[in-house]
Structures are given as C-alpha cells and as structure tokens.
Image 1: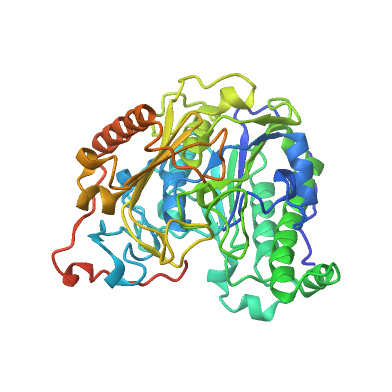
Image 2: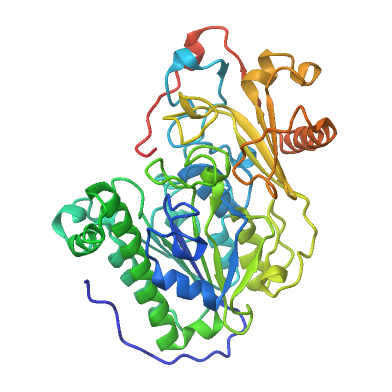
Length: 464
C-alpha cells in the first residue's frame, strides 16, 4: 500500500464555517455497497461511515452518465441550463435506428457558470479537486479556472501510472494521499476537498492482492476484479476517515459520499431496473451518506428524494451564504432530521439524445436510452419518450402512442408495471407538470429527422 501522509496535528475548531469533504465514486451502483444490501461486494469502511451518519435511500444523480451528472453537481443546475447531456455526443449508437434529431451536446461546463467551488472560495474556503473533472480542459473551463486552488489527477499527471504501480493501479490511494495533504496544509481555514475517484469506471483495475482475495471467495476473474476495485475504493475511504478523526478535523467537517451515476451492465442492480446511461432507477439512483459529528445523528435513514445538484445550496448554506438560488434545495434541515425549508414537490431529468449499448431490462434492445425527459414526484415517476411523443401525436394520442411511462415506486421500485393507461388522472397530472418544467427551463426538444445528414454529430466519447 502507498504510504499515507500520516503526520497528525490537532486543530482548533474555533472557526464557524465547517470543512466540506465530497467523495464521489465513478459508476458505482446503488446496490454495489454493503450498506444498501450487497451480499457480494465488501465495503466495511463505508458501512461503518453509514452507521455513524445518515443514509439517503432515494438519492439521485443529476444525469445517467458521467459528464452531465458532474455538470449538474458543479453548477447546481439541471441539464437544460448548462447543455451538457452526454460524453462527446448525443448520437451514440446506430444512426439508422434513430427516429429524431438529438439536441447537440455541449462538452464543457461553460466558464460563465459560478461553480460550487468558486462560490465556496468566495466564502473564504481553500478548494481542492483530486481526480476526475471531465468538464473541460480549455483555459476557461479547466478546474483551476472554475474555482479550485489545487487540482491533482494521478492519471493526467502520469497517464501510465496504472501500468507502473501495481499497488495503486486505479490511482485510488494517490488521490486520497493528495486530498489528505491538501487538508493538512489548509487545516487552519475552512476547506472544500472534492475527492473525485476514477474507480470503479472501466477499465476496471485493482491491487493484485485484492483481486486474489475475491478469487478465493469463488468469484471468476471478471467478478473478482469488479469486487476488488470496490474494496480498494472502500479501503481508501477508511484511510481518509481515519486521518480526519485522528487529526480532530472531523468534528467540524461535513462529509458526503455518493456516486456520479449507476453501475454499468456488469453489475445488475435488481430489483432496480436498468444501468448507467438509462433513466430507470438503476441508472440514476445512488448510494449516499452524509456524516457530520454533532450535527447529523448517527444511524438514521432518510427516504426523501434528493438529487446531487442539491449539494450546491447545501454547501453554500453551511458556509454561511443562505441566499444562494440554484435549481437544488438546501439539505441541511434534512441532515438535522427536520424537513426541507422549501417543500419541493419534484425532481427532474432531461436527456434529449441517444446512448448506445442496451441496459439490463431496458426499454429496447438497441440503446441504453433514447431521448427522454423524466420526473419524480413523491412516490411517482414519469418518463416521457420523445420519439413516440413527437412522431405519434403527442398529448392528442397519449392513450395509444406509448410515449409515457409512469410508475408508483412505493409499490413497484423495479418499474415493471407501467400505469399510464390504467391511472390516466395521475398520468395527466404528471405530464402537465413535466411539460411546464420543460417550458420554464427552456428545455430543448428533439425534432423529426428529415435526412440522415442531420445525424452527423460525432460518436466520439472516451467514456461510456
């Protein structure tokens, strides 16, 4: 194991602003951790953190894959506001199977957005990003131009590191070491450390000793590698939390752990439907822990639907700026076992494009998703599919065009029973609200295809 930065300095807690540590895994599914019920993957440190903090069992990513979810998190805005919908292109997959023209993707989070890091920096925070950014490399969009004092990514600094360092093939421990070093350097002022792991995104890698651990448990090579990568990630979080506690810094630190989107098809999320890239529960529901000694009671579980763009107003309110206005909601009242200060009725997703490679129990056998706009309101979930809506009569033919799916998640979290033609009153209520939200956010619709030349958008994307 890489030597961890172990020098311990007791710090003063006289500062009123809390430190904020955000840990985001990459492609970690809801059921890929022990505290949500996994019987295969071992996450003892996360399980212990969950017992010391609060679990949210209806926490969501802002989108079904990496870049748009991270853009939502950093900007505090829904996808129609920033235009980052996919990695590289919204025309991912066989063009001959596409029935509408997707909205063109924006690859970078524009420098005009005030990110959560910039907003915290304005509140006097030292800010550091350790790991994946994925939102731009230009002078105006790189991390150090978007509010981070310090940026370190083991893969960018040494892209061959995974081949040269068998003890840390995924860069998990070097990112953790760097985050700890940053926190120690800035221990006398409020700090925001964003630990943005590449694990467990493909190509999946892990320490040989950890892989062997799971092979001995009877897993085949592929399954053992997946389990080992999760185990290494969990171990690094244990090292980070151990340092926070030994330094005394944890007493004034809010720690959030979650993932950027659902698991790939390698890991079934049953009973949840779908995987990364889809807008069924398996693609967007995430593990989520909030830990803050003295502020968050131990061992609580909260079922309020939340979404990762809620973290922006939550962090800013904790830092002393309660006037921030974003698309999300301040979660601090929930963390303290109260209710949301503003009772939010619904949360939304808008993906006006195509992603290749079908998911487990998806809508079709070609794409992970076709263009879709979705909403969760209480126990209800609606998905509006653009192809059928635009080409087959929209609201005038709503009973027959198969454009709408609605599910009662309290009774059917697996989204197996579409109630759109059974509970028409609820369907119409949800459709009206969803369309009103699209209008209010100026969400762009896909349009019918006049020729294949309209689908010339590149299929490029270095990640799925």
